[in-house]
Image (tube, rainbow, N blue to C red; front, side, top):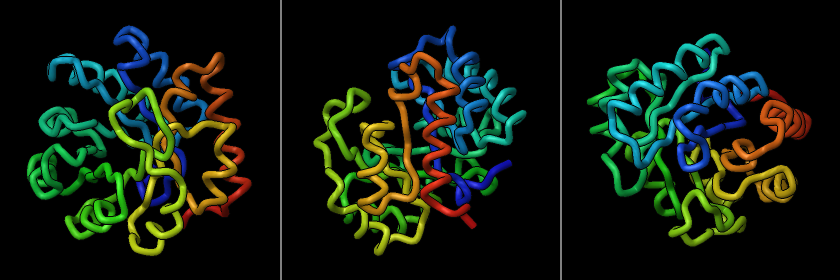
Length: 214
């Protein structure tokens, strides 16, 4: 199983873009393409349905050695034995998340500013999401933070930092030039004509830009 510290490309199966019936196929395509870590995000589904989908995904992600992260639902992550859980600024604290999911499950936190990023590290998060870099349909209520703080957040925070929000193939070069080492891609993968090919191409560009994490 890949460690979160070794991941560069983070995918999300977001039920705002795919239906529950598409989850298995999408998970398989993302894993085949080469995502390093995969999150299940289902803001509007009941916990029981999220647990059902998570179990379907785990069968696939574990075949590929890809950690599965559950967004928000700590009890679901604990019940299915997911490798990670992710909380937002308005969700449970990292300490509470860790108490629920146990020490074997890593905990990530969303951050939207340098101050929040530093606070998440102090709070004991295992990684952070940093963004949204651009306006995004995934989180339309969030004001984009732009690229100007990417280099500084990497200076201030030693955790793995995954830049998120409007990341796609056309923007990848300017994002990495600004200092990003890890990225999260959502709609650009989920809406692609060929999901696996889209993942594979972006992963290849990341690997060409950076030496292996380690």
